[in-house]
Image 1 (tube, one colour):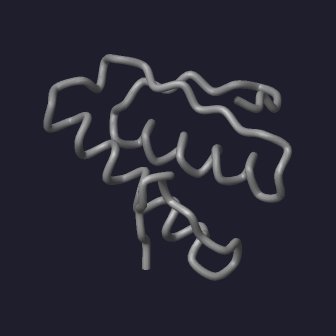
Image 2 (spheres, one colour; image 1 turned 45 degrees about the vertical axis):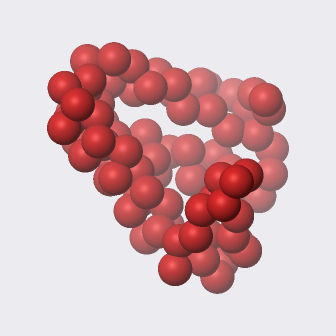
Length: 80
């Protein structure tokens, strides 16, 4: 189950933070961008050095791009 709180989505890697759920969240973002007519506005996807971060960022970027959303993907880790 995906649960959002005041700090965003918090989940245990391998339990709730898994590829399928990450892609579900990305699909929701793509659907929102489509519904609002904002697929031409780029979404920047980055990642940090934590375990699975780069993979998760790539999964999100793939789903968004497939949904017609313009994606700018950082080619190295960039913690915020």
